[in-house]
Each structure stands twice: as structure tokens, then as C-alpha cells.
Length: 259
Image 1 (cartoon, helix red, strand yellow):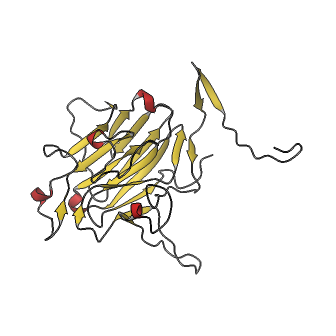
Image 2: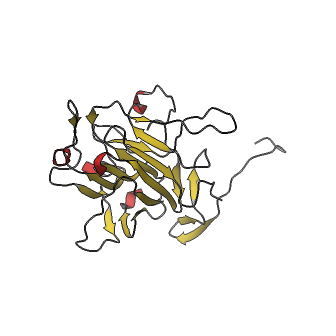
């Protein structure tokens, strides 16, 4: 900085915990917006023509004060023109840097309430690097979460000419975990919850302690992430499978900037 010039500086108070660990006093996000929103594409280029953004659509938000409404980046819709059904994942347009930040994930539309994935990714995650990519499934690195995937044949809702690519093993319909993660806050033998159209799941990301907490109504599930993930930024990630499925993201305490 030039001597005598003005310098912008942002300071984050931290509490020392010993062994060189510093804990942020309050939650911290890296975001350019005051409300929770989705990235237009996983690579973050925000270019509407990017090939990585073809898996999701964004409806127009209502016009206000005579202005034309823009893209509603709080609601992501799995491409309505898709006839090949496989999980594709969308990521929140902010990184949780420290403390704990919660999100409300509302399943606005789910075909036959049959498939959704909710979780988190770290910086090294290769989001949508393969067909059927859903956070935490298949031992995918740098991602953890919950996945529901019923068999379409059993539900009998596939249309003529449509194809289905399965992510979970044939013998499994609900999954919770991820590479190196340990399940907590779950009663031994308890059945994993299922998400239905209209349900809201509250997800808390805590990179400082490496925890993901899921509130499915009255049932709470928690993942303790592997040691190498502690202290690293996390981002909310949601996978949708069927054309027209839609999910809304917001914050339980309202879409306002954190202090």
C-alpha cells in the first residue's frame, strides 16, 4: 500500500484453541450475494451458454417495480427437455469458510418423490465429472451427503423412449455417508428418512469442525467428515435426476448477510 493511502481491510476475530487451531467467532461465508443462490453452472463461469450449465434451468423471478424479472437463482430445475434420466448436481454460489451455516432445501417438484441427493462438496470435488454424479455416492472424493433413488420400474412412471441411469446399487434405495465420513446422531438400526415432494430439509455445514447435519423434520442425521477435510471450505450441493424436478434454496433465518 502507498504510504499515507487508504487501505480496505477485513478482520475476522478468532479464538485460539491450542495446537495452532483458530476458531472463527461467528459464521463466515464467501459470497457476493445477500441471499442463498445456485451457481448457473458448477464451474462458476456464469455464462448461460456454458456446456456445464445445460443440466439445469432457472425460471424467471417475478418483476418488481415495473422492471423485467431476471433468472430466479434460488430455484433450480432439472432440464425439462431431458429424456435420459441421471443424477446431475448443482452447487450453491457461496463457500462456507468457517463456523456453521444452515440452508433450507425445499423439494418443490420430484417426479413420484423418487430421487434427490443433498450434501456438500469441498474444493477438490469434480462435480458432474461422470454421468449420475451425486454428492457422497460411489466413493466420490471431496463430497458427502444423502441420496434417495427409488427404482423407476417399481413405480412404473418412465415414459416411452426415456432411459434411466442408476447411481445407487440395485439393492439400495437410500444412502447416507461419503468417503471417510462417519455417521453420528443416528439410532442404531434406525431407517434412513425419505424425502417427498414438498418436504424441506435443513442442512448445516460446519467446515471448522468438519460436520454436516441434516434435519429431516423431527429426525436428525450427522456426518463427521474425515480429518483431512477439517478447516476446508464447503459448499451445499443438490442432485436431481428427472426432467422438471425442482429444488429451492434459502436460509432458515431469512436471506440476509451474516454479520
